[in-house]
Image 1 (spheres, helix red, strand yellow):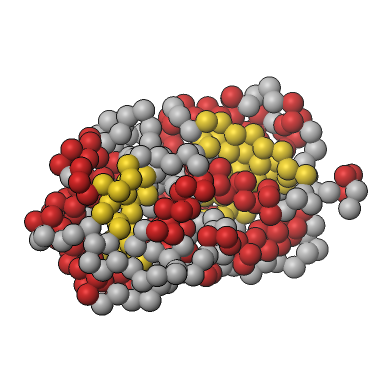
Image 2: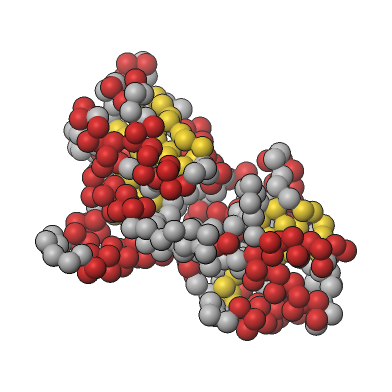
Length: 374
């Protein structure tokens, strides 16, 4: 294939968080026959980013070039971008929904606003195809859109949800095949190594993790704990309290910048734990499960799509103390009767990347057959 004949895809990441970077790098590495060009903005100043990315890219020369396809993340203000760059109006656009602002909780430190929701909604209407990383993400977005439209006082257009629904499908962030390694030893049921590998932010439930650790300690349950994940300038104080109260339980604390070190931790931990209030796919859970960890997660969100029922504890969002006890009950039951590992085979990159390729090809060349959905 000559350079001139290679498909040209412009990839836009408006808030380039770690999971967004992994996704885009996996796709570009997996499809080297495509000419990729990426614009990415750092994952900070969220309110400014989600509303201002089209302005930040106003003078980008590449936006004036011809492209076969635009692939944008859900943080990109796609409607404004196309309005400011009319030459992109006829270019097929795919909006990839890593998350949606209708289902994202607002912390006590944030000012509630409809602006992020409207960016998502206008982006979905401006895109030719809308991809979601989980069915829960898709469902909550469509339900959130419907509820949002009911708040409009008048002049509400008909069929908005149906229009988006017709152009949407589920295609998860793939898990790199190299992470799928058979476990060489059984999990440690006497003193399990627990892994909490999530962003250090309120929506991942660090306060609930503290309550779970306290519940296990009261029961005399032995365990070691590793707390890793992306950390920001400010983080929930519950994590500081956890480290202060249980220093002897800590196996590893803090972000692991070297990917090889992180992959090694995934292979040596026994149980990967989630206490999240929101997780639109759960990439950290899926990666740990691929590496052989047993999952422990609440019975909510996207976890119901891949965490076995006997590894999910009762969801009690309004009663964190009761939920911590339910999580401790489920963990101790798993230690008494450990199930077989449950690697998420359907999320393998080798199985999902062809779906991405088929979708891109179908938009670039409409004569191509439509791809199957996940």
